[in-house]
Length: 117
Image (cartoon, rainbow, N blue to C red; front, side, top):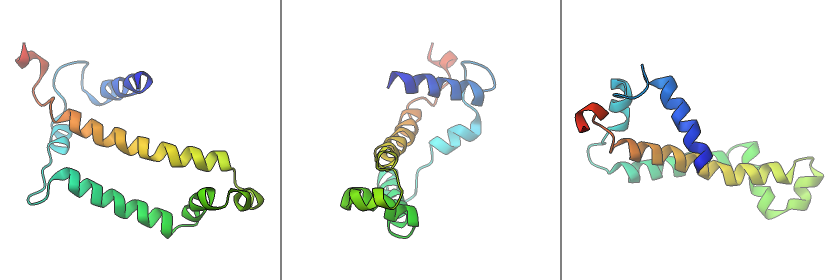
């Protein structure tokens, strides 16, 4: 968690026109998006579920990922690394969680720091 805070801080420095102050307008518009009839977390969950289903069921790498849980011996015999597939299986949800958490946290930081003081 602490290591990722350095990554987010570095990205903020790259995105912001100057350190501190207000986020760019396009970034505020992106993070304050509210769909008209469906709450954003539900919409995000449905979109993520569809993308994951497509990725796992319709791609060849999805078959490899499914095979890492179903038959690891066959996966090794086919030449795939069980360790690499397990890393992908555990890292992908963490990346999705970080993206959604960054969106949720940015909803609270809509005013510039100068206005809060």
